[in-house]
Length: 346
Image (tube, rainbow, N blue to C red; front, side, top):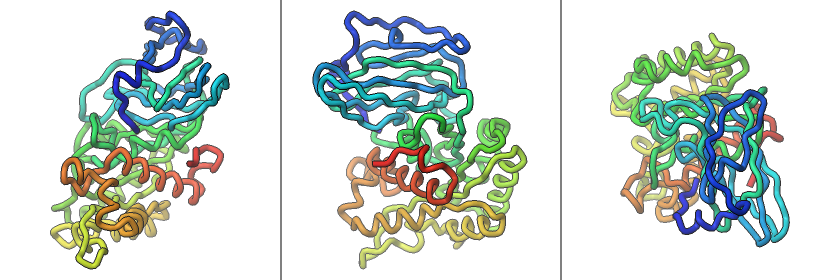
């Protein structure tokens, strides 16, 4: 997801004379463009899942992206020729807190921000989603809805790759291990009751299990899997993204980079083992990100992480999180977890 300065946002094209008018949530009644200013839209709706339909374009050539809530990328930049209109739709999760579960509550209702190189919004309709499929995310800071630039988790970028009818409810939280995620009341004890039959629950926890022994780590993953299934959900285990630590030969370090902790616990290997033993779908993001980072090399991979901004080789930039979210999207389709028609490509 991209940040946009006020000068760019001020260029958004809307109908003449629009002002922000608080919208009320009426069942079955769509909320529209009267709730938008030149830069953003606010809809006074309670927590839940909502379908958003937008008509993009104006008298001149335009290019519009939409983000919302805690910096989530909801619609990738979409071009429209001068005088043409382009219809797009997506489904968004509204919750409190709106970002990390242990973070601040955020703004009530649904907030959408218009961006892109030449944004133009002709119309918008927001209605409560009736039959949306839900993807819940359980993870750490490399997955979560980060509260500010330059940080971004891959879960924060995943919504832009999904079409209307599939929502992402990102309950990843910074600093969490399998131990703390299970023990903190605002995390697993809050998330598990939200799981509905048929929901996908993606679990990526490893980066902060630095002192967790193998038996405990394995047992914690099994507890999460069983807890998802208890609610009729479908667990998906995700191996962690790699850290950007290279050997002198251009390969990634077998310990730090590939998530082997100080006790010698090979987290990706344990996740693969649990997935096989429990017959759980596996997204091997460790293998995917290792291949990509090594192919980019020492210099090229800096843009994926926050090396240039923070000398940080663990957390991803907006660009890196977007690339990694694309890998997750591809794996969801390849494993038949999400229909190909439900995702955006490119």
